[in-house]
Length: 192
Image (cartoon, rainbow, N blue to C red; front, top):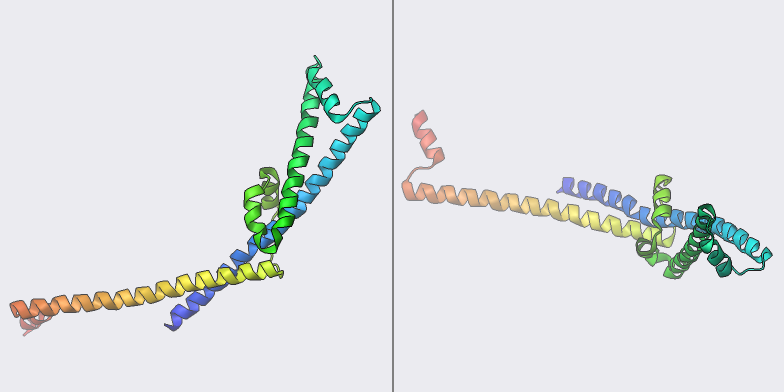
């Protein structure tokens, strides 16, 4: 049983390290989200400034660009419209993550994550063990879960092994009693 405890401890530590990466990834994602918002704010502000210089509101400028016969101009209008829409969506996502609080942030991230930002955060991700309350809680839950699973499996295997061996012994005894011979008795009689 000492081996089972050692294995359970090792798996528990692996679970703690793995589970603590959720809050760490959420933190790194939030940093990238903030950077994307800052960049889009710059792009949209420049467009709004250009529209204002022409005496137009954003929607009016976008409508004019969409009606323009030049494909390049229409394309730039579509890009500006998409940038403004993405900015609003990312701001809403950032607000949801801020409102989620420490312990719900990972779950909220799975619901609202922007695919492009999440992919880039994943590609640049560097594992770390956060020492925040959510990181420690996630590590504790990961440890407990894998420790219990490993220790329970080891106990179950040991119990099943004992039960299986007892069943085999019972069958052999039953056969020996019924026929007067068994595998050991036959072997002994042949050697004599």
